Length: 354
Length: 247
Image (cartoon, rainbow over all chains, first blue to last red; front, top):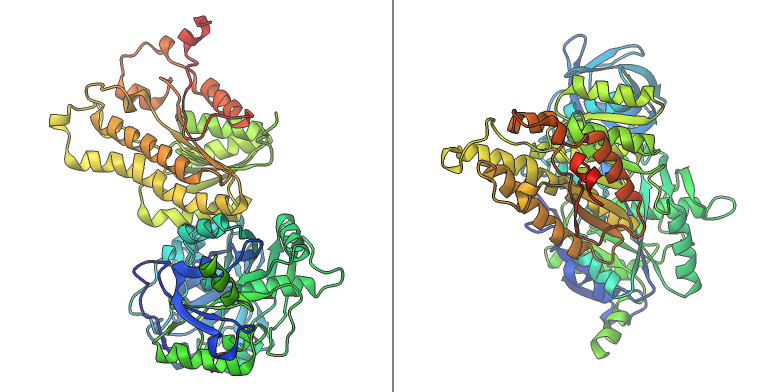
């Protein structure tokens, strides 16, 4: 499968592959387009989205010796501090793994990003390129500077720069995400309101999606870092009510799975409020809260693909990946979608006959 | 009040002068967490400092609502400062060059600038902020309009057309947002004793003009009223001296 290299003409009109582990093997896959999403959810289901806005997390600048530095913010660490991955010369047109590493910067080194300066105050044990930056300003002044100096993280497979609007979902609120929670990118209000008319409820949480890959094996082995989330009380109530009525909880994206399952795995179960999770969803992971996922299209070799295994078996997923490849599905941030939801195609059948 | 503004996150554009400044102060006094947007950093900083000195919470975002690139920067900075926005007041507006000109003498660029500030800017910001409001099931958007939107005053063509379009957009927003918990209201504050009014009509008798502080208080009361105005309603506030003699 190839990555989508441009923003789709319409946010909400991309390919959608529906994967239903409860359907007979010869009828467990359905290829359609994203506007049909409401056909596969039922009244009483709950769609949970990550409402994090995407931060312009890429800062370009130089160190005191004049060496080019790109910092990609990966986690907030307080009023004036962020964890960041440093890159050297070059830009997003090159694959991150092909870029030279940045000059070695000791603790106390200063980096200047336009009018914004920062100091390296810590190195990660995983890599000296994974650092904590303390900026010269904090709070409102820092956010103003980030929006002035920063750009969204870019991807080498893209044909053009992504502007800030292109990495926001239609419901983005607090700027917590350092890369777009892209599973929700194809959701328009047309689709969300159609879901509501059908009796599907929505709920939100905020999850600070960090970088998925940096091209540095030492750092990538440490990813994803523990990421913070905030689950509103209304969402906890909606999840409980949905499960009590026998409805299904559908996560939009792996960030929502991580936040809900990470919270649910803690003592006392899913509770409202902020938290942090280092939960990694593996093929053997058995979700407690989430029944299905709306995800970007992923190829079988991608690490994200293994996350889908919590919601469908390996044979079905292999068949899905093969179909998506044959059908020319596009992957990555601007690509097509997959809905992995047991029973999704049965809803469709009822709908068609009803 | 059954719909208290205390603890709400409110964003006001055009927050450094006139009605916007008065609204920021009135909202903060009512307990709102206020984010003010304006182009001029120094003026804005003064307003924010005054609100904080009075014990209120205020944050400044320096931006031009007509700047297409500023939309998500404003939305992001506001949410970083106070959290998701509950109330958006589209107050910023421009008259265009003064003295106001006849349409026959109005430069096309000046009409475009009026539309950019008074219509397109509010559309972009509403689009960015109403989405998360709908997701959470509640919120309010106020478009500040003018009687120039409904009356054909000579020399007010560019401004009046932009405000008429803003009002119509507001009515359609309200229709589309019906049932989502998010409401939109067009508010005509009447003629106020502001710098903008003085720019437009320098020889006006200021005794006949409303005090923006008083108008701001009435808008805050409107936001707190339960039930509030009908969705898409046009509410005319008349708190000038003439209003005092009205029954």
